[in-house]
Structures are given as structure tokens and as C-alpha cells.
Amino acid sequence: MNAAYMPILKSKDGEFRAYSHLKKHEKEAIAIFFDLTKPSSSEKERVNYSHQSFLDKKIEGILSCFDGTLPLFPSFNRIFLDAFYFDPATTLENGQHIMTYAFDCLQSKNIVVSPVVGYERWDELNPIIEYQDALKEIREKTSGNFCVRLGSEALDDDMTSEPEYFHERMNSIIDDLMLSPSNCIVLLDFGNVSKKNISALIQQAKSSINMIREYNFSKVFIGGCSMPDYIGEVVEANSTAILQRKEMLVWKAITEDSKFFDIGFSDYGIRNSESQDNGSGKNINGKIWYSIQNSYFVTRGHMLSEPPKGQQFKKLAESIIMSGYWSSYSSNWADQEIFKATINTIKDLKKWIGIGTNRHIYCVLQEIAEHKQKVLAKEKLPKSLHHDRQ
Image (cartoon, rainbow, N blue to C red; front, side, top):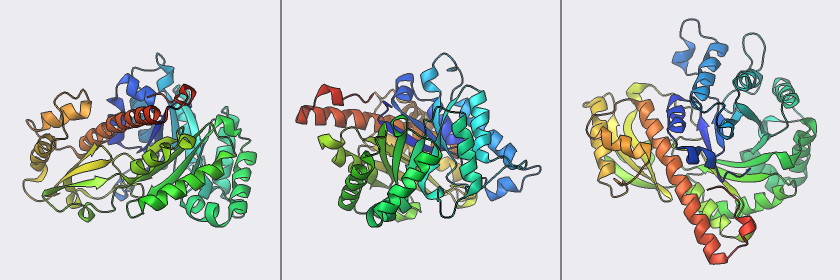
């Protein structure tokens, strides 16, 4: 695993668009992670709705990210796949688990799928049989390149208060799925860190990394999300604000230490880690999340149901252009689209998610590269450690 960045993206149209517009070298520099999202209430109410038809659309969206690259560029077609937002026992109408169905469909289209196993969802004391059987079935069809995802139960509770129990559960996952950690990665997913202390997060991350090192995973990623539950928490209507990306600040602080230089970075793009983002249009505000060094520059309008409704995005795009953070020299697709939006208003919310996510990945890759160069120059680390592809 050479990638230094693993964005955790929801399986939605905006994210698919964002990935599709990345350049070749940007796609090569990341490990793409898709989280299957649950249907909204309105989607469930549609005539002839079924879990299978819903998943088929998600799978089509993932496949659309790779149009024109299969099979010419096989390095592009590996993804990590999880169904974090679903009940772990969820099956299709025919009884097949959603993970095995998605895995089989994507593999049949030449997508190399690395499944994700959730620590919190794999409990020997109270096993979710459908979930465990599904991942065991998938394991038989793969070379065992899994991602083990540790969430709040592992990071906040078991690793700190019950280390022996934590190791028992980890060993259960590894043994039951017959995994070789050297062929797998591990994600320390701190979730929503918007209200957490950065110094405390740094110490917790270091302690967690030290504990997980003994398993010899091929790569360790740490990730989180600084997006608020509600935009009103950080910026008032018709104004702008700057919001720290705490997960990036934590990663930079940790990797300044040569012992942690190889740790990968992960985040949730411009989405809240805990939200399904399935709110109704009338309650949505016009807003653009524009990623900058260590932060988001946020420009917010007002309710889309209020005049001038979608037309307000023209003014929001202009505020990005005039912010001092946008550059006319940028080759980034998102930056170019934002400039176009000052001339011809883009009212499509999904496209704005795509623009924001594409800009975010572009920005993070630049940050990672610059940070690593600074650390190497300062510490004069052995070149052998500088193996992450930028």
C-alpha cells in the first residue's frame, strides 16, 4: 500500500462526479474508499423500490468512476468497500447479504474490491451471523486484502480501558477471516472530531497506533471529520467563515515524528461522518465548502426555498473567487467549475458536492506532499522511509 491518502466517500452522485474528474496522477495517489449509503425515506417510497434496485444504482455509480480506465489502467480499479450506514444484518429480498451482492457485482466488472470489516460489528459474544457469514464468504473469493476499521468503541473504550479484550476481538477477526495483517490495512476512524481537543486527539492517536503496530498491518491510516452537525454551528446565514480541519492538524503533528512518518491520512471529504445527508431540499441552505490549508473556507447563503433560491450560488461562487484562496492558475477541475459558476449559475446541489469534494482531494494531496517534504528536509530522514506515493 503506497497511497498516503484514503478519502472515505459516500456512494453518492456528487462523490462519483468528484472522483471521475480527478487527474490520472491524483487517482494513483489515493486509496479510494466507498461507504454504501442507505436509501432516504423518499427513495423507499418509490414504486417498485427494492434493496437490490437501490444497490444496483450505487454499483452503477461506482462503475461510472472508472469509465475509460478499465482495463487499460488496472491500478485505478481497486476500491475499499463498506456498508457502515446499514444495519450489519441487512440482506436483499432474496436473502443475499448486501456486501456479498455488491462485491460480486463489482468484481464481475473488473473492479478489485478490498472489503472492510468493522471492529464494532464483529462481536463474538453477540455475533451478527449474517454479517460474519457474508465477510467469510467474500474472504473465500479474495486474496485477503481487507481493511480493518476501528471506530469509537475500539478507540475510545476498548483500547484504553480494556486492552486485553481489544486484542481478543482483533484476534477473533483475524483468525475467523483467516487474514494475514501484512496483506491488510487498518483504519483508525475517529469519526466526528469537531468538538474534540486537538492535543488530546494527538495523544490518543499515538497511543492507538503504538498498540496496533504489533499486528504488522501493511499500512495504518488515521482519519476523522471536522464537519459540524449543522452549518449554523460554524457560519451564520449570508456570511463566510473558516473552519479548522482538526483531523489534518492531528495527522501533521503526529507525522512530524519519524516513528509515525509512514502513517496514512484519511477523512470524509466535505461530508459529516455521522450524517446520511438525506434532508429534504426545502431545508437545505445554499453553501460551498472550499478546502484550504488545514481548514475549510465556508461561504453560506440561506434556505434554498427562499428567493433567489438556487440563483444564490452565483454570489457564493463569487465569494470563493474573491476570498484570496482561489487561484486562476489552478489546473483543478473544481476551481475551473467555480469560476464558470460566476458566469452561468450552477444550481445542482449534487454537482456542488462533486465540486467541493474534488477540490478537497486536490487540496489534501498537495498538503500531504508539502508536509512530507518539510519533515524530510527538517529531520533528514532516510530516503527508504519516503516511499509513500505523492
